[in-house]
Length: 484
Length: 118
Image 1 (tube, rainbow over the protein chains, first blue to last red):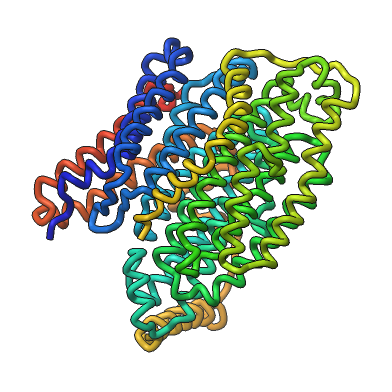
Image 2 (spheres, chains in turn yellow, brown):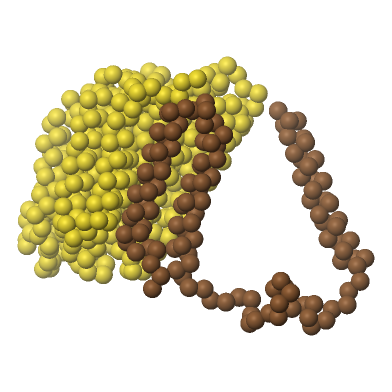
């Protein structure tokens, strides 16, 4: 038996490179501490850029490696590029914020890179064991990052809560994997598909296993009713970590959900789609209704990220239909792109207004921003409009493709629910705009070079990329041709 | 398929039943003559010093975590050693990479002073 060939290493190059890079950076952090505090953001960003370059080269020649446990195809390349983008945005948001909050420890960037490797592996995992491995690799650095403002009690609390609940969710995922293995005698995604096609002795086990896997991953992407940890963890973590978690963990979770369900489980779509439907509806309604009640911008954005998980889940509901499938997943990828840029930008504004010890995060702290900081307020207004889905923003294009795909799959009820959810969300997004422009106040902001660049850049990107959404969507659709 | 698990179920019932039975018999049949010395905590026949629950320096936990790290490394060596011949040079290189990764972690912990006992 051949265990591997050298071509496998080439297929996994982006992953192997980033992992080695992060390991080297860990040594740099230990042995050149003083210098690394200055150069670490640049080194981490350089590593991400190179990873993105390696991943971009994989477009167009899909391959499977390590005995079919690892898939290097357009889907994983596209997800990797999304992760590189969100990683770069997160680094730009972090570097000055960490200095200001005196959290500037170089391990921050190392942990971030390790977490990104886990997310990349989520997108490439073609075997349930690898999915589990990737989930742990994604999560464990995030637990540490959530508690990074130690000895700040809120941050420690966030880290511990995230860890305990995350470990619990991992247990669900693992038990689901065990049941699926019990039913199909394989953990390979294509193997499960073939076994399910040719008839199972105990089809019920496959169903229960799939449901448990869904629970484990729904926790990661913060879908209602598995969202309880999200507001507390997002609020307690350092804001730059929250920005990274909101974007990165979501990409990783959805990458695994999409690949597992489309590759391995189309045969049980009839039974699992109602469950997905209910999960989506709950997430859309719950996330938006709870967001209305918030007075803290950080918590409001946390609930908003839950509701966007609901929109992304809409795509998954249609996964069982062959005709609609590619469109659906391409629209999910496009929505992720829109969400990353909008979300990172809005967290940038939050970071600019945040003061020491969790102050400066209330809605009232944003009063008068439109007069004193017109550029920042305009950027925030753009992000809020993009979250709501108003043209001409990327968020509108994302929702447009998503609803189109859902309607193609003939889930009219779900599309209407999505529209209603968008309508509800307009209330709290526009409320922030009203506070910024129509109330008086004198908010103080931190004007830092990379932070300003990111926020303004993201705002421009949200508007400009809207006009390029057609080619971007085509790129996402191209990425998916090889998912099977 | 479930029938395959029957021996496990039998073993489970037998072992639970037997242990409950033995402990219960000891309680019911055995003579009981308690004395101060007999009910004292067992410390290998020595006179007990102080109460059983004591406060421990928190540093032990760090050492314990580091121990787990290297303990798992050794556990991973075992299956590799068993299949050493089949894996050949590939296995050797793979294991070297594994050790290097752990060594990096060890070097980091050492350099950051995790092993110092102030």
